[in-house]
Length: 278
Image 1 (spheres, one colour):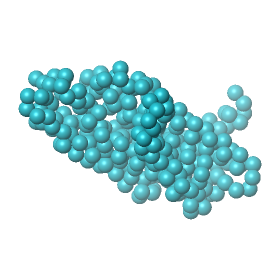
Image 2 (cartoon, helix red, strand yellow; image 1 turned 120 degrees about the vertical axis):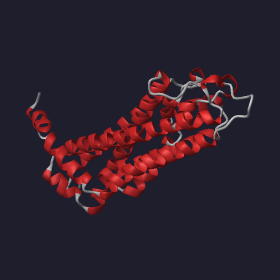
Image 3 (cartoon, one colour; image 1 turned 30 degrees about the vertical axis):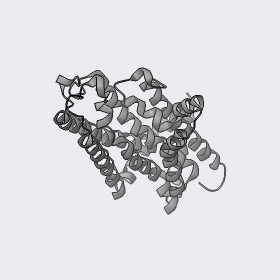
Image 4 (cartoon, one colour; image 1 turned 180 degrees about the horizontal axis):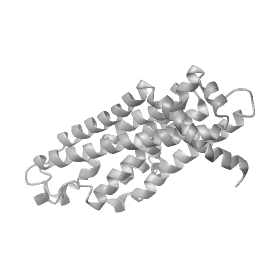
């Protein structure tokens, strides 16, 4: 291992501490994390509260309802707040000019980005877990009263049930990957508004564009490449054979987008290190 690599590793605890100090002293960080939980749970509760089936036609074979996915509907809204968290983790420093102080204190720019990625991802994992667990609990309590009972073929939602556990864990990982995707894009473009627009467009506009494409082959391929559509396959617990990708393969697509964005951001951050500006 090179001396530079050893130096970078040995300096990571200090870099993590410095980045954590900045994050925890920003009121927006914890408001946004709380917002992630509230938005995720609120939309999930609204979705399960609105779900119903007519008497006599509630059998699982008739409705094909995916209760876990329905309960986790709020993840689609919560990811917007998560994207803002990922963007502000670095772009806020560019906006205030504090990035110069950060990079002067920690000249190894990739260490700074790695620390920001670890902290942003970790915080979103915690908030996402809280939102996902609360959403599944809401589904477990509300849905049986709307006809989705064990007698009709719907096992109670539980993280002790394999498919529900995969949907829950996958949703939490998905939110963390969205945060990393946003961080990578923000590092590359350095402007908060532009980065947020790019991330939200990638997540929400792509599926809209795909929906109007009539060619079945192109439609399927673009759906497989969509960071949101493919990533949320991980929530599916029924009809898996009809999915263009398996649940974990779909989450892998989102992971590929996040990794690519971080690599791009890291490359540009390193290249800018050769010049005079951050």
